Image 1 (cartoon, rainbow, N blue to C red):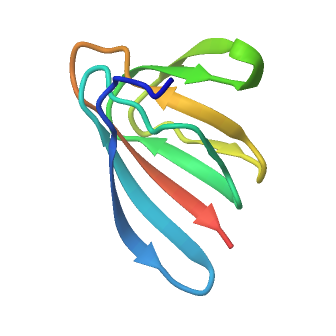
Image 2 (cartoon, rainbow, N blue to C red; image 1 turned 135 degrees about the vertical axis):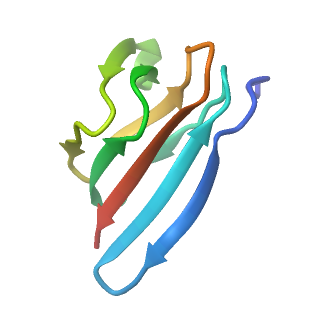
Length: 97
């Protein structure tokens, strides 16, 4: 059954031979939709708050994030990211090709 959540808005800022940089804006309750990362990536939160990370097999984790404090993940991560906050959540994702 498809999700009834609003979709996060991704704006591609850079796409060249080495990197893809995308800004993601999540309204309250918005999600990315299920996806699998094709590259190693770094996420830089622009706001402070939590993101709900839904994983394969029905797992879910509440991830506290702080504006300006990045984290990195490797290619192959599969998940859906949801904004459980009452306010907009924004992050920049940098993918290494």
